[in-house]
Length: 206
Image (cartoon, rainbow, N blue to C red):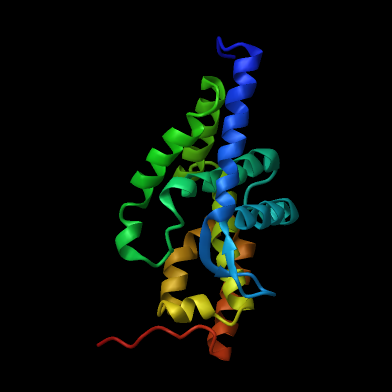
């Protein structure tokens, strides 16, 4: 615990909670399956968390600390309040993504009391490093989620940006480190998306 008074702690925690509401205003390239409007990052975090508690039995590592995974999931994308959502296939912005998001993590988690700020930042770093079973499973679900939504919306996001099947596989294949079952399911989805024309196959070499 820090030396802050209970009132000071609560004030800083509330400041963080209020700041987190801004995640609802950060929009992603993926679409909602019904309205076909752009999904926001808070909605992604919720659906992502629901996937974790539903699919935890498919983690490569058992037993899995599901609560730790959920804590990572719920704070991981808060950095997008400052850094924005970086599209997975945007090579230019991907090059600076971690640096931009790390600065955002310092500011946003820094709103909290020091002990919680350090705890949340450590969880964010754990997710980024993918060095623990929990982080690898979190990453597997995080990568699977936009693939699922793209498949369910006719690949609109993929087509808009000229994404091909080989790029989808290359970008997301580390999901198998967290769950071979989820990755196998993803590969079947990708094959079906190619077969239906929702996802173009690899471009021929020039």
